Amino acid sequence: MSKVSIIIPVYNKAPYLDSCISSVINQTYKNLEIIIIDDGSTDNSLEICEKYRKKDERIQLISQENQGVSVARNKGIQKASGEWIYFLDADDYLELDAFEILVNEIIQDKEIDLIEFGAKKWQNNELVGERIPSKKQIYTDNIKLIKENEVKPFSACLHFTKKDLLINNKIQFDEDLKHNEDALFMYKVFLNSKRTLVMDKCFYNIVLSENSATRSGVKKVQLLNNIQFADRLIDYCKANNVSIDLKNELNKLFNYFFMSLLYYPSFFTDLKLLQSNFNRVYDKHKNILTINILKLARIHFLLILVPLFLKYRVFKRNHQL
Image (cartoon, rainbow, N blue to C red):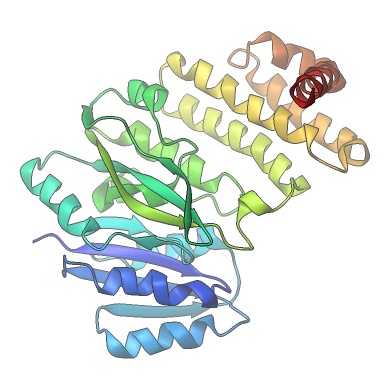
């Protein structure tokens, strides 16, 4: 039976680790390698992980200075000896039959490189949202897979990946990005998968903790990383001769960027920096970033943001009446 390597980066997640690690060691499928990387935690996360390491010989515990989730995940890939790799965030947890069902799928179809599934979001033990594919389907057309994908934004935690797919295509997490590193990684995985199974099942449970991105405001590093992400994805597509059909997907990415700018409190302070970074990427890739909104943004961000602000101000006022 296939060995599954589960990679869990940990940084100051002590309140959630019991639930997370228990959901792995109690899986109904037992041929697991559990790689926990403590990324310089300053709470008692390392102590909790050590407690579980002593209980379960399948656990490898690595401790390193704080270097970020991408470095931790890449180290996990290097250490993994399983045929399949799975990434789990330390404040979330899995359904206990997740790997039994996933491995059963790859036994039935040995050509599968990647399996995608859904997630539920929980806050204070209440279900607050979910992203679950509407039907079970096999994809061999990667561009179609990306366009039709129902679990955006892309997360490595919602994918079960053949290790050879990562190793043979030299796919790693971008260690320079603090945001969107998951999405960039998954685009590369999608574009190299020859056969992807999308399942209409949910195996992953997201716990909205105090440090969850959904609870924090927009930050400068996030906005800059959004621009870098688009630049690096386009570079990757060009270097690997990805069909220009991906153009619409790339253009859509900047819609999220402009919406984020509306909620960025230091917009005018950092306008020059953000504008220059955007202009550099636009000028480099203007043959791909062709929609009119981006052409206007190249002249000045305010040509986009003022109409957006007025539109949502009117919308909000109408819904308050």
